[in-house]
Length: 238
Image 1 (cartoon, rainbow, N blue to C red):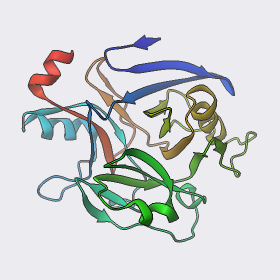
Image 2: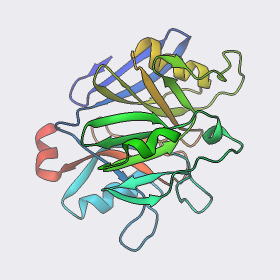
Image 3: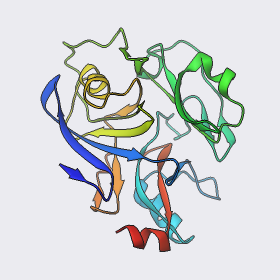
């Protein structure tokens, strides 16, 4: 089903026929994509609804949003976080346990040349002029190849979200049911034709939108990402 006003597509992945995904296409020529962490008092937003309220008091609104990467118990980002050209958290190239450290991991970034997903160790070579960046892991798809450690027989299923790039399109995805990492990565590559895709998180994955109205909050969150409209412009889109 297509909802052209919001740029969404819902469909079934070939690898897991019962799975349904919400896909949001971002056009960086017209959409203001932004990363958020905390307010002017350095208090984390925690929820997409609170972020939207904060924006609306400033004459803007959150057209849609989702969680933007993994975070520590105090909601600080795990790994690199750059918002409005300011680095708030450094790149993390260490080894460790958990999905973030399932190497290769990667960085989704927006710079002067548009959006890219790069393997984390390559970030330094493209960091100049970056306005927005979030690091996470694993790197689900890299140059058309699935991450080698994703197991199609895995029994670990969660609601998951991530971002992919392919054919000049930036596509944010959240599953509507619990899925494996392998099925999630396969959806990016095989259905959405994304050459590169980055996992953002699972189990806490949440989605918020204005039209249609949705708020699938599952947990308090750290980094957030979404498209922001001026309220006058937003009214014209509804």
